Amino acid sequence: MDKEKRQEIIRKVMALYLQYGIRSVTMDDVVREAGISKKTLYQYFTNKSELVTAVIDCDSNLKTKEYDEAIEGVSNAIEKMLRFYDFQMKLIKEYNPSMIYDLKKYYPEVHRSFVEKKREMIYENVLNNLNQGKSEGLYRKELNQEVIALLNLMRVEAFVNSTIFRLEELLTKEFFTEMFTYHMYGIVSEKGRKILEQKIDKLK
Image (tube, rainbow, N blue to C red; front, side, top):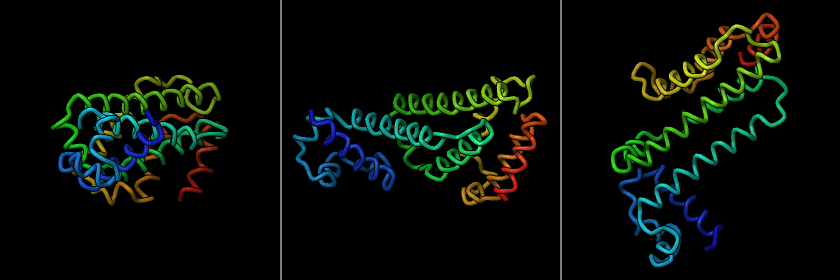
């Protein structure tokens, strides 16, 4: 099987799903967009469910890779947390309600796996950051990193489903700065506060 061709099909299908949602995109739409025959498509994916799974898995892996690249070479936990919040805002910006709705309604198992992977990625990255910050003396030594990591996860999911804030408000620099400072001032030590205040000045 040509792995490069398979990835090319997945990328094109992802673009279709983002634009039109999952349900309305048929296998005929896929072959037209990919410029292949239906026979060729079914050599890579036996049915639409398998194709949807492959697209969602690929997207999750790309997001993980993007974040790893974003924090590469970052020196301390506070700077990494800033990059992570920036990454979370990027995810919110790319959030597609109709696609997620279709995924949840018509492919519940795939949706469940997608949610679990996303939660794990967010939780593990924040938890690792909190552990690093404590070891660097930048975060309060008595903080409960497991609880704070879960609170952060709950807040991120609440933002996406919020009817209090409009999406446009969530994506403003002002909202980003307030969200970041609200979280960070609750976890930094005195040493960390000095570094944080320098970062906040740059944000503002």
